[in-house]
Image 1: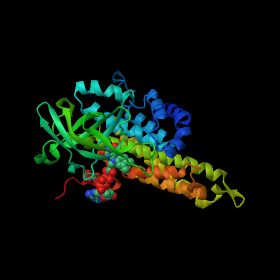
Image 2: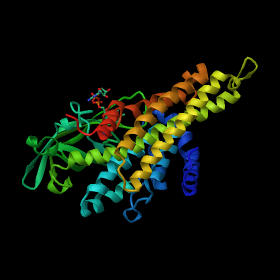
Image 3: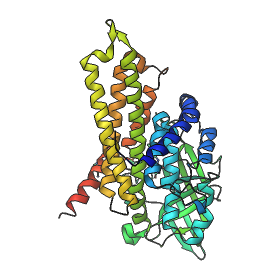
Image 4: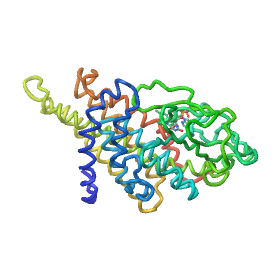
Length: 383
Ligand SMILES: Cc1cc2nc3c(=O)[nH]c(=O)nc-3n(C[C@H](O)[C@H](O)[C@H](O)COP(=O)(O)OP(=O)(O)OC[C@H]3O[C@@H](n4cnc5c(N)ncnc54)[C@H](O)[C@@H]3O)c2cc1C
């Protein structure tokens, strides 16, 4: 158990009640149907979960980062799909506008996102620019009072032509400037020349939409530039620092969910005349899972607290995401082992947790990239 201020435990209790009543009963069907859970997301919006960390005067819930972390953790404990929908919407689709947007952009774009009337998405990854996001190839050419955007993005969470969606995307405005030539833009779904070209069919997180975006001579007003030309690379590095806390929270929630089920099973499954939890082999698995979940929680919460305190947190958020995602994979693997053959069946949620958590070692920077970020922060630039 991690000792945090009592107000956060009270907050968690409220989130947990909501998850038990609304999210958990739908989680299996969301996975089986593989469709975006409109009903659950609407209920989340009513709770303010689509406006976490957005000030109340802009239509948000005005929570701090630790409260946001707790929401993503508790939701993911039951349903990873809903967890990633909230994480991508809040950290990637909304936060960059809130943080880097001019006052008019914040006033125009943030309230509908915070109220959940519009979903938020973030388009950074491209077919030829994944881990190496500096290799962005989508271009934005200034032509009078607008930019002309051409290119494509892939694997974009929450992307959809079916619902009102706002995107923050990156594009090259000056090829000669390298990473200083990448800029960010706000673009709404339905803009002429911009379309969702393909919906991916994924192994897990099946209720979350993941799609390819295409831009063909899209005319975007100059006012849609986020910050200044050339700020895009810096902006998305900072955005991902924060986003990694929420992916860490998602991994943590799934790990805790797997541990909860494993504990229950260890107490109730009788073999050789006794509950399997009487066997040291099972006890050691439970002990290792619980120890690692607590350590992951301490790291994820610490990164959130550092962010809220205005202190540097890039190393800590990368380490928290790296560790929590690997713990989550371990816990879902071991929970299936504790369930034996039943864990392999779709009648129980363990195989879903196992599939869902695999993304946490890939999205918002793979585990290899987290290690690079941590080492680079510690070592500096060596020649
Ligand atoms: C379900 C899902 C949702 C996603 N949502 C979004 C989203 O909303 N927005 C968005 O912009 N992107 C999103 N992504 C993309 C995600 O961030 C990328 O998949 C990820 O950054 C890895 O890029 P890649 O897939 O191109 O892999 P690659 O970059 O091709 O990497 C392949 C392998 O090589 C390794 N590798 C690459 N470079 C190095 C290096 N320098 N040193 C050591 N190893 C290296 C990687 O770690 C990996 O193991 C999503 C992806 C998925 C699967």
